[in-house]
Length: 124
Image 1: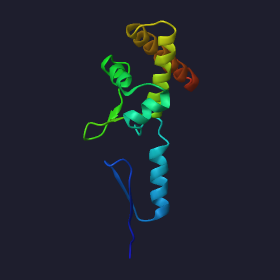
Image 2: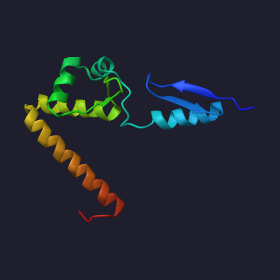
Image 3: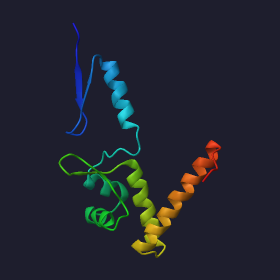
């Protein structure tokens, strides 16, 4: 007889596995992805020391694109938290949101080029 275990991660997705060990492996795979949105807006705001309205405003300015649940709730990832900290540093340096957008785009491009070089693929 087969046994089935389930875990609900954030109200939207369920994991189903035949054994608890398989379920734990699936859960570990899901929770180690730094780009996966897991934090609600109030938790993310607390983690970076900002207000929820600031996070919403940064999104309207195109500086941030958090994941959304099927119900439309924002879910912030660890990568989003790093980006928010970058935004804060650039604001403290005196840049406005347009300048921050350009700097972050250039930083992301440089990072991508570094990754290509590390792979030995300097085609671009």
